[in-house]
Image 1 (spheres, helix red, strand yellow):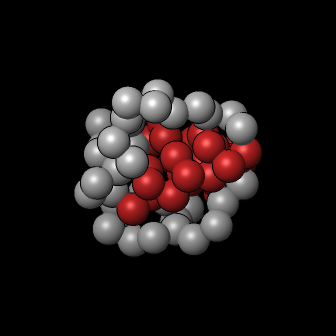
Image 2 (image 1 turned 90 degrees about the vertical axis):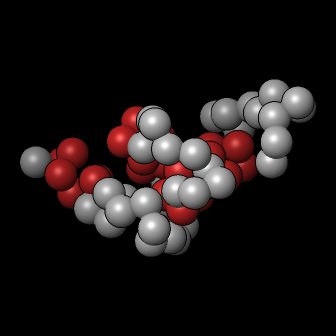
Length: 64
């Protein structure tokens, strides 16, 4: 199943998943919906990837 392959390596908050595609970053954001970028390496990396890709625009008031 393709979803299982995409989820590999992004389930653990404490491990930096390294560079990821925009599709994988989007999936990571779904999996880590309740996580904070201050604590979760996966969500932090995914958010950064989506911002660089132009798929996500942060509110200027958001704490980076």
